[in-house]
Length: 123
Image (cartoon, rainbow, N blue to C red; front, side):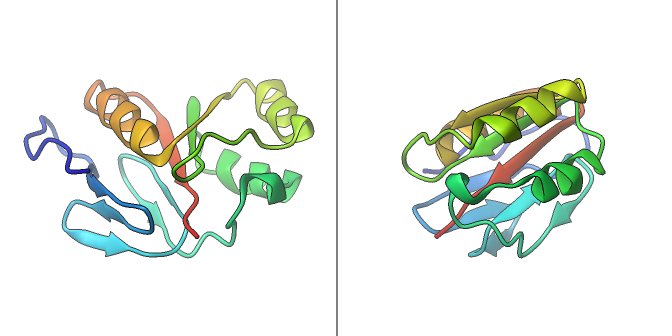
């Protein structure tokens, strides 16, 4: 799925999402990753939402997002309840959705200057 090539402002944007690829600006990623408007964390070791742990919450929280968009692949899958609760206790919103939905929502929030983080889980 190609997303809009036009964007306002200077931020890292998602250009394209496929079953096993996410393209940030003009670079393809084939392993799970975290992306904020200012940085990409490559080779995030998560390949399934069910394996998310409190360690992953700490990794993500260290990037100081207001909201986390958890892209769980081609299907929406919710992480363990303790992971969701850990984000909420820190005052960080979290939404689980497909990778395509996470990319579109991330693009909108990043364009608004929000402190958003998209976590894309790839097989």
